[in-house]
Length: 248
Image (cartoon, rainbow, N blue to C red; front, side, top):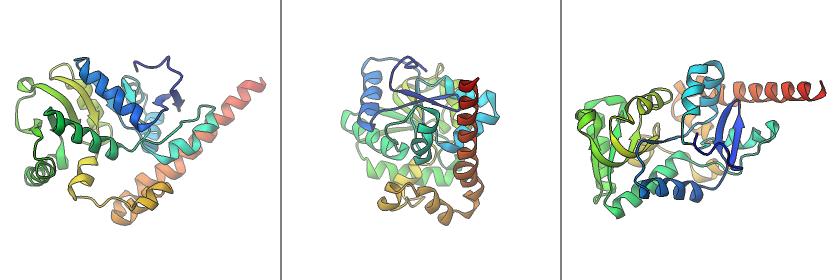
């Protein structure tokens, strides 16, 4: 992670996360684009990501290669103080994506997407149609429909395959595609196009978006269990280990 030495980086379970405001992160991304840098990576880990990284050193290494890891989860902020590195603010991946799309439309930036709706052709076509209608001035390139090597000149690439797959895809392709910034966004485009109904604002402010997702998609409860039960246990375990090392 390029900003490891910054005071605005907090580590939880050996994964560095940026600790600043959404506006600051947005500015950092825009600075990367304006500088014409290529192949910069932004991941948006939540508690489930960190649980997966705890049990998989390979995935932890993937997250540690990001230029910016954005803390997209209330649990990260709530429990970060237990390991002595308080994260200042949760940054919603969906909100970050929405702001970037608005800016890209305004500046006429071409953007790429990959892994939309799990690659299902019909659903992917419908989602991109809705996205184009929402941002009519935006040039969108579906990387699932063309050779990666021919996709040049993109400012931002949104990888939508979900945890692990999207990050691995980004690292495997960021040097093949001449794009400035690659971002793992999971289902953020689903929220923006109505495929998935986002939790009401008041639930989000209370940190209960996970509960809403469980009600909407009962199949997500195993994922929620990892985020709201397993993750706190691992953080407490880390805190206990630090305390024991300190007393010794």
